[in-house]
Image (cartoon, rainbow, N blue to C red):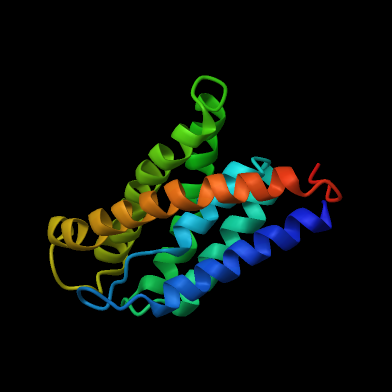
Length: 173
């Protein structure tokens, strides 16, 4: 594994952790998951399974540590690796057909919806700790998080891509 790539991924996870920590809870202690945008950015930048597994596990555990949702710890640990693998598969299918600057935000929206669905399903149906209906939580938490994460990806991805292209002295292979 390339140490430089791991450092970049660690920076993305730490930025996501700060975003996830400072976002206030919206309903029943559930927060929109801003850590997802950074995980998706890491997948788009370095779409290799070994990095994705490490990134998704780190994201899941950090998200579990910073969640305020009852039962969110287990749900985050289950949700992030599944979402990351689905996102990776979709990205690999589409990256050669559509420009990455277009694919990244679209898949971020799809990935956030997938992640939110898995999270709410695990929390509501398996753990059974949260009150409120699935659709109410989906509409009030997942949909706003989808919009925010997509906007974050639209803004940040071209910037990060330009920075990585300009860093001539750094090899990310």
